[in-house]
Image 1: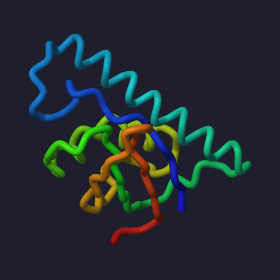
Image 2 (image 1 turned 60 degrees about the horizontal axis):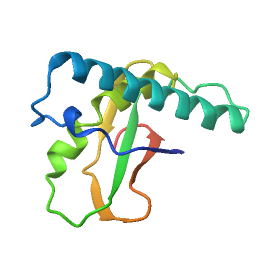
Image 3 (image 1 turned 90 degrees about the vertical axis):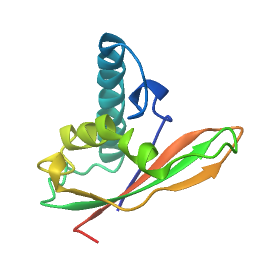
Image 4 (image 1 turned 135 degrees about the vertical axis):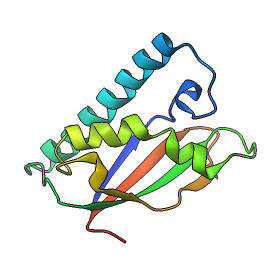
Length: 123
């Protein structure tokens, strides 16, 4: 199992975000690169090669700063660029090979983040 932490995606990456395409494009690129570098760092720390699994299951736990009501579907969809970055890091051969389990939404006022657990195979 691979476990990484990434920042909460910018609100413009939410499917209901109403941002300019140029701003969204820049944010998407940053999110993708952050996920790729974070995954590569995790692999390098453990001195393992990228697994290039044929399929993988992702479980995401969002830790938000506020207790506001949120939509799980939108939270999961906001991680599209993150999943692309994980594929870029070589965890799977193609980002279509990811199966996403329903996300968990929690509150951590001091450290908002997304914890992503990746396991080989499908659920």
